[in-house]
Image (cartoon, rainbow, N blue to C red; front, side):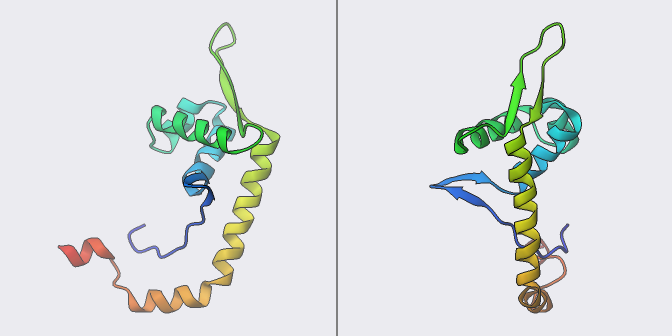
Length: 123
């Protein structure tokens, strides 16, 4: 991804990032795995970090985006709520529209940038 030039939308609630690319990736992974720990592993994130992101999302919205069940006979787990699915779909659509809206400007910036970015210029 070192050569990728893109924009990243974040939805803020005050100083808190209510939703952004990391939280979207985590929601998708929870949707696929049914577990916060499995989702975290699949995207290379620590369980603690994933749990903190889920808590932040759930606190920023009027209703939770992720519902959790503690372990026990059935083993617990997590699922993306209907609102979580709506937020994810809306966020993905916003990201696509934003990328399309700035495509010409991003191509301009891309033409001015080095291939490796800041890491390459520091070596």
